[in-house]
Length: 195
Image (cartoon, rainbow, N blue to C red; front, side, top):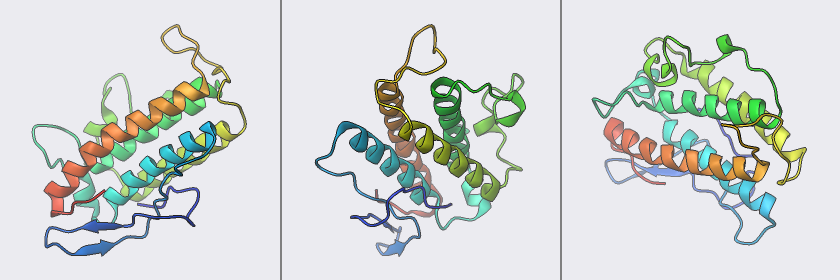
C-alpha cells in the first residue's frame, strides 16, 4: 500500500508492533494532527491521519494476506476496507461535493453485488485497488481545498444539503470506524498490533 499523507515532515507514527514484540518499520509516513490549527486544517489533518492509518495496516502484507477474511463469518478483509474507502471517498467528494455523475461501472458496488467492495476481493489486484484509492484521495484533497467548510455540496444526500464540514467529519468517523476493523484484521493475519 502507498503513502496517503499529504505532509510527511511532522511527527510520524510509522512502526507497527509485530506478534513477537519487535517493531517493523513501514514506508508510510503518518503525520500526527496538530494540537492547534484552524478548523479546516485540523479536519484535513485528522482525515489524512486516518487515511494513513489504513495504509499502515496494509503495509508489508502479501496480496493473499490483504484479501484474507481473517474474522469469519465476516467478509471484511484489509483489501475490502481499501476498496470500500475508495467508494466512500468517491461518493462524498466526487458525487456529493463536486456534483459529478458517477459511472456505475466505475466502482465496486453493483446492483447484483451491493457489497462488491468487500465480497469480490478474491481476484482483486491490491496494487490496482490501492492506486484507485490514492486517486480518489487526491481528488478529495483537491476538491476540499478549493471550497470553504460552509460550501454546500452540489448534490443532496437523502434529501438534505450537506456541507464540506459535515463531509469531513463524516469521513473521519468512517475511517476511524474501519481502522478499528483493520486493527483486528491485521492482528489476526500476522500478530501485528499498534496504531
